Image 1 (tube, rainbow, N blue to C red):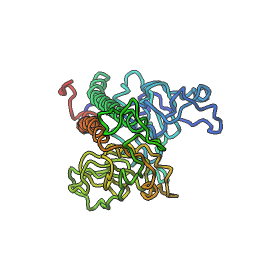
Image 2 (cartoon, rainbow, N blue to C red):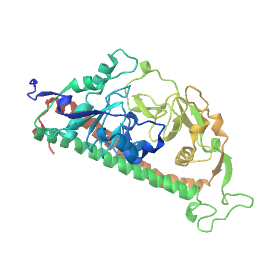
Image 3 (tube, rainbow, N blue to C red):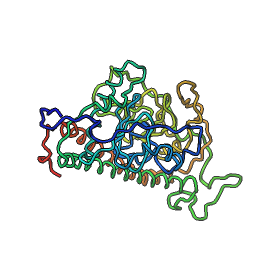
Length: 397
């Protein structure tokens, strides 16, 4: 093995352990599919360090068919076909993958977490190598993948590096769990008050639960009215902002799926609600800082008879994908949903909900900001640790 300038040996991926290429069982045989084993595809590889969830799974029959390429826990999966090339994840339990993924089952002198972090730094390199093959879809076959090299320090150093980076990922995962719990609590409160009508009497000008009084000839409690979605939230198409005109700043640029960049000018004051207009539809976002909604989105121009969080949970409770008006490109016309009938609670009840759920969302925002700092710090350390430019014994545990 050649010696690197950083004194760590340079080792081929194929020499780090066994390398497997996944396979997809015949899809026409439904009995091969089930929930016993995760069946990991590139779409499952952006959920963090471990593949805790997979959209599809295999039954025991499917696992028996592919038993020669069954993966143990802590195997390192790398996407090697398509534009998700270089995505990397660890198996959390015995699993299988499709043929777009090559997986390394490390030998005893290679730490799985170290290998995961090392390969995470190579995404752009993998994409470039795959695109250079001349085929329409980037591909890095098993042979080429196995011939790639990386720097491999002694096992104690591998574990030390992996431990440092894993500490950041554990803090990030903990923050994400807390955010998910807060979101579930706020959503459950919305359902209790505005779907099941189990709201506190002091929060409503008219009625409370138990003993909610329903209006004669209506399914709504006294004090509520039947309106339309446009009464709750008036949606407007976002604004053009070509990439050439974007300037680095602190204002988030919001696309259909979330933040896509930053700018120095806000077009809309927070809080706001955003959903997809073109390309991606169905996801609904609650925005807590002034922002620039892109023209691929719809943003909340007004809340005529509602408060922002009531509008957010009402809109996110609608299956927006059923209103897709596009053929080749999914699209959502605001006029197709503005007229949907909506129950509108008294403003006093909505304001109380905004206070309680708003406090939860403030906590979520703090946790998200903490997570972003942790990610930036981890991503700054990652290439330095993997190249040997930073001595691990100089970093505090």
